[in-house]
Structure formats: C-alpha cells, structure tokens
Image (cartoon, rainbow, N blue to C red; front, side):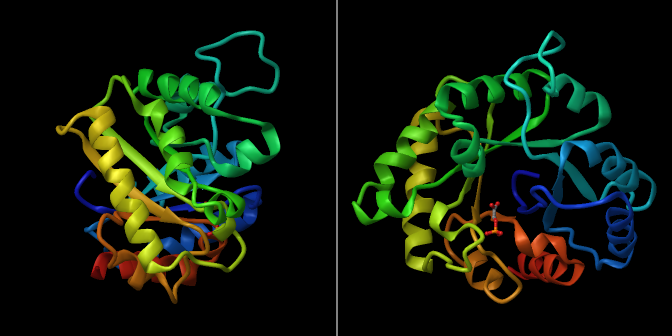
Length: 251
Ligand code: PGA
C-alpha cells in the first residue's frame, strides 16, 4: 500500500442507495490496476452499503473510506457523532481528516484534527490528513508557513505510516489546478516536513487534490513526490474516475 499510487474518490455530500449500487456494479468491469490503491469516501450513512458492495461485488478491490470522524473516541453522549471505533467495526479502511470544507464550514482547526488522528490510529485505521492554503495565503506568499502549521499535528503520532493530501483551497471544485511547478514545490516541501516531524523511517504518501480529472491526471502523477490523487467531482462518474485510476497505473 505504501509503495503504490493512491486514487481516493471523495463523494462529499453526494450519492443515493440506488446510484451507489449501480456505480459499484460498474466497477466490476474495471481493468486491473495492481499499482494503485483505490478508495472511495462516501457519506457516513452509505459506508456500510459501500463496504458490503466492495466485499461482495468487488472482492475488496476498492477500499472503504470515510470523509470525517468524531473527535470523541469509542462511545458516549455525543448526539449525531460517529466514532473511529464504529468505523473500524463496519470495515472502513481510511479516514479523511481536516478536509478544508471541514475547517471552512465547521471551524475545525489543528487541535480537533489531532484528536481525530489519534482516535483513527488507535483503532488501527489509516488517517489521510488534508492540508492546503487559501488563495489569499498563497498570494501573500505564506503557503509554506500555512502548510507547515497544518502538518505540525503529525509530530509525535504513534505511527510509521503518514498519508497527506495537499489540496490548495483555491483549486477545490473550481476547475483551477495548481501548476505542476506549484505542485512539485509543495510536495517536496511536505515530504521534507514529514521527515523532520516523524523521522526518516516513515512510509509516506502525498496525494494531490483540487480539480483532478481525466485530462490532467497523467501530468499531475508525473510530478515528483506526487503519490496519488484525492478526487472530488471526477469521482462521481465511473468513466472519469477510472480514467484517473488508469493514469495512476500507467505513471
Ligand atoms: P475536486 O475536490 O476534485 O472536486 O476539486 C477535491 C477535494 O475536495 O477533495
């Protein structure tokens, strides 16, 4: 897993039982992609459906990913929350943490993200930490400082496996993709930061996210230190998502 490209789809608040099922059945004909770890992050309410479909229809060729998790562990009086333990219970593999839409609409910052990371690791799941700067921060030349601050929550975690998605906020859902130069600079920076925070002996995956599609995926995968993609809009269609998987397989 830690030497392959990752292509993780993030459905965000999209999907319905029937459509999800139809999509899962289409994935049965997907060509083999043995050099790619494929995952889909569905809304929490559909995770069990997805996981069952992965097992029964797809022989676990696609990992079940969650878009978020409670900052509270185990069980308790936290109305509306779903714990990492519950996600492990139903067969989730990877949990996104700190997506910029979580900080934008729900005010999540480092402290909450750190609690979530710890909870996810404690139940043996893989956290995928999302980081990214706003347009304002990039225009002010502060992008590395911002990302370094976001990455600081990785320090001292009890794991040798670190997965991060770099998603410039201004490139998410906007059709604007960072240039390959911008991606190269930031991914090299993130790689260096992870080594200094977590030690030289960690496994690292750094995914790029933000308007990745069938047309630009191959160029993005060719950039040094790009170990995959976190794909929003283009993961909702079988054709575009599998084209991105093909590009990862060929890269
Ligand atoms: P997008 O979303 O591919 O639709 O830009 C990416 C993400 O937010 O993970």
